[in-house]
Structure formats: C-alpha cells, structure tokens
Image (cartoon, rainbow, N blue to C red; front, side):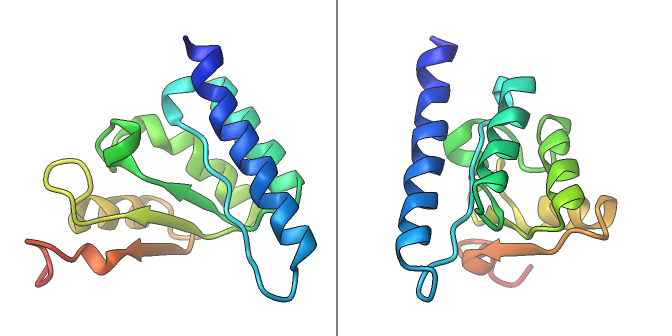
Length: 126
C-alpha cells in the first residue's frame, strides 16, 4: 500500500516540474511528500527540489498529521537545507491551527513559511 500511495507524490511532483519547465515565466512549482513515508518522503522531496521545484507544500489535514508534529520535521530540515519556502495549509481545527505553524516557525527560524488561508476559519483572529 505504501508504494502505491507514494507514487502519487512522485508523479505529481514530476508533472508540476514539467509544467514549470514549459512555462517558467508563469509558474513556480512546489513539491510535496507525505511525511508518514519517512525516509522515502525525504527522498521524494529531494528529487522534487532537484527537478527545479522551489518549495514544499504541506497539507496536514489531508496527509493526516498535526501540523506541529515531529513527523514533519525531517521535511522541514530539507526545506531549510535547500533554502526553499514551505506552504502550510492552516485553518483546520486540531490538525492545522495557526499556533501550530507558529511553533514550527520558532523551531525553524531560517525557513520561510507561507500560512495558507491565513488560518482563516475559526482562527482568523489568531
């Protein structure tokens, strides 16, 4: 099952890289990797960034973890190493709250984070 699920990240990253290569004046692509796949996720992210993608997208609600979880930190270390920004979905109760992203930002001060949706839902004042 893990092999099957990882294919989507690899194929998706390759498709995004291909689109960016076709329209470099119009598109900036971000890679994704599900941190549940551990070392394989790290390899997938590195390959995506080596293909020319210029950031990491994390969607903890879809990928099934709490945004501030230790699970995502190896991917953030790679983003820091490659000096690319990290887009994080925020605004989902329990798994993607703005303060969880704040915790990551404090732990990874050299990473530029993009707070997707500005935490907008019940957390717009946070």
